[in-house]
Image (cartoon, rainbow, N blue to C red; front, side):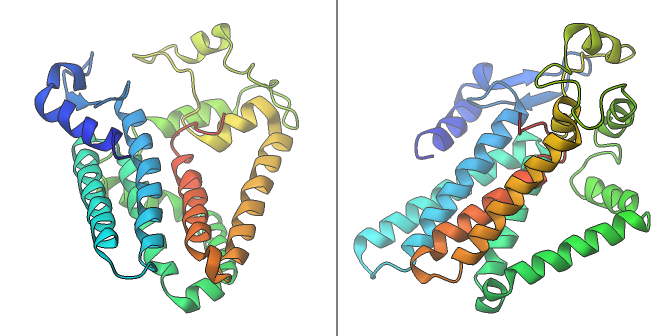
Length: 264
C-alpha cells in the first residue's frame, strides 16, 4: 500500500501517457494508474484500503507515542490519496465498495453492533429477500446507479445477465469448471456487442455457469462460514480489529462480486 497508492498518484498526475487511456468507441478518457484497466485499479485500491484501515484501527489501541502518531498519519495520508484516485478512476463498483467498507467499520465501532452482528446480518438478509420478492430491487438499483453516475442497466450488465440465465447448461453442475466461456460460446454471445463478452460481470453468476447450483451453493457456504467465524471473533478483544477487518473485507468482496466476476 505504501508503494502502490503513491505510485498511482504519481503516474496519473505526472506520467499521464502511461496511466491515461481513451475509450476506443467514445473517446472518453479513463485512468488506469499502475493497473491494466480502471476496474483492476479500483479493485486493487479497495483491497489496499482494507488493509490500511485495519492498520489504522489496530494502532488505535496502542499506547500514545510519537511512533503511533506517525503511523496514524501515514495511514490517513494513504487513505486520502487512495480516495483521490478512486474519485477520478470512474470505477463505480470500487467507490460503492469503499463506502460500504467505511460504513461497516463505523457500525462495528459500536459495542452493541459487535455483540449482535449476526442478528443484524439475519435481519439484513430477510430485508434483501423481501425487497426481491416485492419487486423493489429494480427501483433501488436505479437509485444506487444514479447516485454513482451510472445508468440503471449498470452499463448493459442486466441484458448480459438475462441472456446468460437462458443458456443451455446443467443447472446442478453447470457447463463444467472453467469451460463455459469457450471461444465458440463467447463469440456467439458477443454478437451484437461492440466488444467481446468473456465474463458474466457477476461473481455468483459466473460460478453458477461453470459449476451450477452445487458450485454456487458451496461458494455461499464458504462465505457464510467465514462471516460467522469472524462475527464470533469480534467478541474477543485480542482479535477484535483483525476480525472486524476480515468481516468487512468478506462482505465487501460479496458486494464487488455483484457487478464483477471476481471469484473465479
